[in-house]
Length: 309
Length: 309
Image 1 (cartoon, chains in turn cyan, green):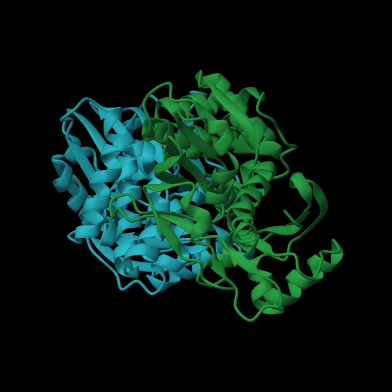
Image 2 (spheres, rainbow over the protein chains, first blue to last red):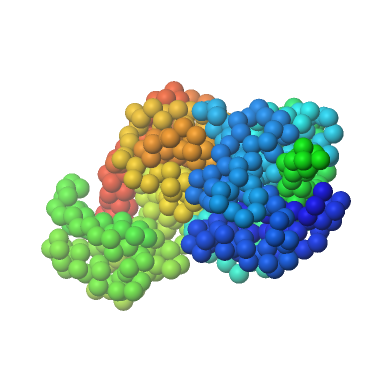
């Protein structure tokens, strides 16, 4: 099919790819102009600037996902209720009115169970991009981040999902709580750090002591001169261990896990799975969203091209 | 014994009582001049002002507890390591040098176990004030707050304790996280609120889903128009339920609980214990600290008077 543009537009980030024949990446443009910024400067002007950056043809259609489709976004794209087939997502894309080119925004997913209410917006497109790796089996997709998503998929149908506030809690605790003093000037750590792995395991085994273990980081600073780096690695291990204690119980034991992650989080979760004996394969998060957008573009516009032929 | 002055001097609060014969309260003075303020304006001037307010005799000695004895306080009063007898606390009080009257600060308690490191400062005096209610038995003392303390006491000996960051996490989550929008303009709730009790029970039963349940407050706002008051009651119930899941496992089942609390927290924890079938008795937190300070004053100065007689 002809050129199209794929956009992942989140709360605080913007990523655009110009895609050519056979899915070739012809150009890429990124910035911090997420939904929050674009609400002030205007969605059209942000998009136009990035389209110009990559030299997108004037008639190339645009497929988008993420918070751009939220109620506070550009055009509300709603939610599809789970259980839902991955192949349903593209068909529910919403057009942005009054544009010179065809621009569509993919919907999110909603779990309308009052005892397990949940929503996602953006991650459904990553799921679509992982479809090939899922084969036809039962699997658990882990998408760590500010709000980590764990999704149960059986034969390409999303049965349900759970969001864990891991990344955001790590941030507010390390910046706003009494632990800010313990982690100040931490030098960085990775998934092999002994304090990370020890805290991960303890928290996974005893999730009920989560808020007590948090305070013990402070007490270890006072009584045992815990270093800021060890304190930060411990805090990270505790938060991820608590997430895994809950998330891994959402599917039968030994359900294969597909980790969708990149950068530092990828390393931390791979190390965590290894420590806990969880079998997993990893898909790069950037690749997943781009592939998901491409799949949606093919679903939407190849069909149009077919009907015009 | 003669008049003495009892002071509970915390991070953000100051409370002083002038005590006369038989423990009669002759005067009381309170302010927000906690350690943080006093470090700037001077500990002596804050104390002198409150002593003048209640008309304390020039020779009345002063017994103090709380963060005034921390490293960043007036004079560091150190920690007594647990296990420790409650009767050991008074003997380790530290004198403030260079004063015209006898001023002493009580030490805190430390648990120097690297896998369960913990500290308290101020609550040890509340424990001392609860000694009569403990009789000679095995009990669990619950002191909810910013940093909730749970203390195992057997025959007036503190075997160990655990701090849970419940109150502080409730604050940072409701003010700094994405949930701030869900709880904005909440109208207030008490321990009988159905959303509080439901969340308490769920969180107590499934502590491993704590950070997932937190996000579900956000999702219920989007999908089910959860009210700000129900959202705040749910958040509170979740945080207290998580604390109780961990804290109640620290002692054998059916160990009697003594709740040391006042105000709103007293009502929430009493309702929580009732909901979970935990037997508890309550001691007012203000009474406990004043009684503990009085006990320490008697231990320190009646002995002096006796030796002078």
